[in-house]
Image (cartoon, rainbow, N blue to C red):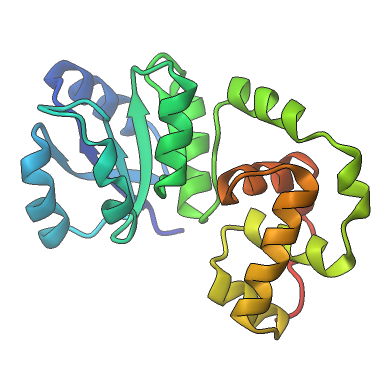
Length: 211
């Protein structure tokens, strides 16, 4: 039997937490190993309880979006929020969250995001995908070199610069140079948008390059 994904829920609404746990209990591949109602209790929870994915509400006793970068170094972060603002979604993803899920979505959508995050992939709401993908469609994509395409594929798979360098047997500074060129060619601002581009054009599902 495959190992179940270990989840921690951080949300200040007890009724929502209870309902979410009951829905997650119906999923055969996950288990809720902890929950906190206050963000101030989350650090100790993460110290004593290992988890694969943290389900994090942005608004607890305070706004916690600024803590995502630190939390993402400990575990995979899935933001689960009532916010409908695309600016909040992009800010969370840029700070290291692997997914941004609105609370109005069905549990099947949440599970898709959780499983993607557990694999190290970035999951973005469909509406936001469509909007950003429209911005990313550009004739410049046809001017990408083979090496640039390989790097885009690696970013789509969630690899960091050092991991890309090892996989492609090139220097990390070379990876950074290629990324800057890719950003300019595609009119992309950062890795989040590049990961979305890779997934939308199917590069994240292709061969993973040289090991």
